[in-house]
Length: 195
Image 1 (cartoon, helix red, strand yellow):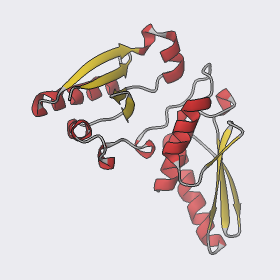
Image 2: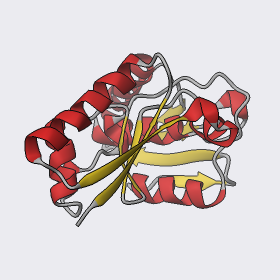
Image 3: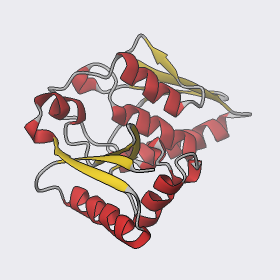
């Protein structure tokens, strides 16, 4: 079976170049049956608005398989067995890309797909923000969790609202610059769940 690969990129993107080199290496080393289409998002205003600087993005047979980083081994494993969960990139493996504004928040089918990918009890409230409440047996553990979330937020440069009380922490995430949700919000939520 020949697989259709769409590689979304931008000019002068070192991360894109590295990912594309990994894809080419996987194809050559493993003689993968793929057809690759490279698409520069700057040439398509709709793609540019949707993906902003959030590239590279690699689709295999119409399904997003990788975003930002890919290794030759992971790409080969994904193509050889697209049902293998270990070969798929997860939201927690992505980087939070800072939003510079001027892009619409995710809505509709894209929002539903991200929410399904995230799972973990996160609630999408009014297509505007993500919420989740975590419970703990005491205040000390709730505080320790809050500090872990704070460290993740600082590392990612994306900061949630955090409500701390005895035995519980409520996290609320959205992107202020678009007054709604972006992919980065789901990435941060996944990283919090994966801590």
